[in-house]
Length: 251
Image (cartoon, rainbow, N blue to C red; front, side, top):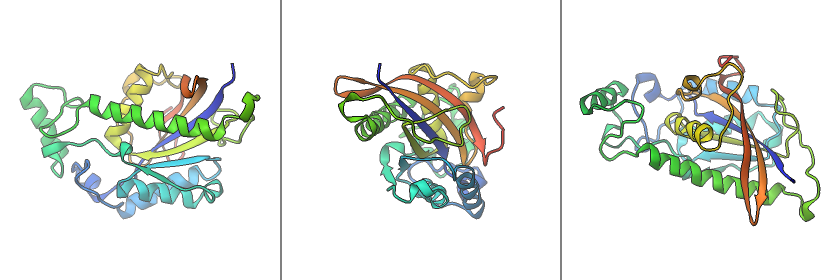
């Protein structure tokens, strides 16, 4: 069966002053990167400078766009690319808790008798609502990449540079996607539980589903096939998870 080999490098934005203070940003607070956050984004860019990206997607929130810009500035393959800012990649909405302390949200969850990771404050998004946005983004991304990179006439797929390799091998396309911590938690869980994404050797589910650090990098290897007029994932593997500036924090 003909297939595309697609890389997906998923990056959390760098630190903001809200992150530093332990405050929730969600969607209501559109903050910029702190000085530390700019350094983190630059370190991510340095690590990814030799990756051959074919597409760049970012949340339309400032902190994510600034992180994507820092990465693109150091990558020659991005010189010809235009960043696509998509609201489907926004952070989870925390409703009435936005702008407040993360600890206060934990207290709200305890008072409601609910586990903290899955707790939805009044006015906030449920995990299922965030997962729907993840699914919608993946559908859009796959159709765009398939339309752009599937060979005309159904010829054999060609190889494309994907380095640094990290076990991924040749790729036909490679998407850089910059988003947010809570959103990425939901996305990775969706990848594992519904797209049957395999984990790196020695990495358990607790590690896979944990919050990525600021400017943390996750990489996935997707096999994409054509079903009628649509492009769908037929296989998915996580190459590494929550890596920071090239450091092997996941292994």
